[in-house]
Image (cartoon, rainbow, N blue to C red; front, side, top):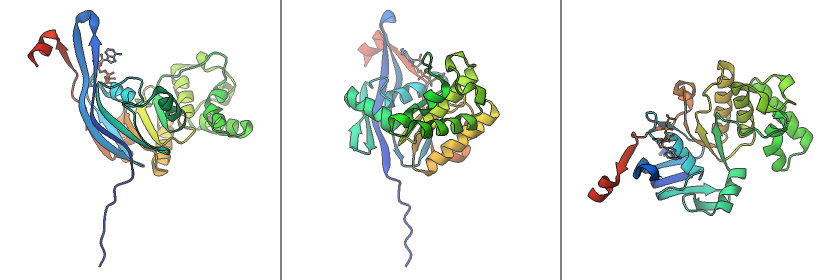
Length: 246
Ligand SMILES: Nc1ncnc2c1ncn2[C@@H]1O[C@H](COP(=O)(O)OP(=O)(O)OP(=O)(O)O)[C@@H](O)[C@H]1O
């Protein structure tokens, strides 16, 4: 007898009852960015986050990256060293995870003055112990794939166009396979060739087991990668009177 079981992939992230609000002190109001979010993300899975402008998509990604602390809930991350609640972990543990396991990819480059593009891109590999020449060779490979011209490789990205900066940013963010990738509109302002290169790289990372959750300007680009979608509802603003009524 053949029994077919569709085993779920090992969990990477389990989010329960996650909520985030912003206090708008100057207006004496509370803005609920998202409320009571729950989902599970397994190895090699890809979740597309959807919702109107202001629905809380970026805020959810930033809360998972712990740029923000949530108001309530849990985000259990199953890492190489065991399980940790990203909603409550110490900053020092979050810093280690950001270096080694959890990546955040946005369209904005955090360019450092007088650091060449190829140095910036190769840095994660060098920090992981790869010899400099090998790390630089890989950095050039990825800069080439994303369409950054060779004459720009030794130049400073602070002088690059918006699209060129974004390509450097992507090459750096995706050069070292992470366990979990948070993607905040990584294709915005990229040309067609760079978008295709990005999607190819994401497909490769997904196949190697990297879990991803993200917002995409052109979701059709990643249609072939999506396992599930999460729809966020539009943000509610509560003022003091609402608080009293609750
Ligand atoms: N640091 C902050 N302080 C106060 N309010 C904030 C802050 N960050 C975001 N918000 C508010 O939270 C809500 C959700 O914002 P967010 O950027 O997460 O939306 P989004 O779904 O990513 O929108 P978009 O599709 O326009 O990028 C918005 O109303 C925004 O004004």
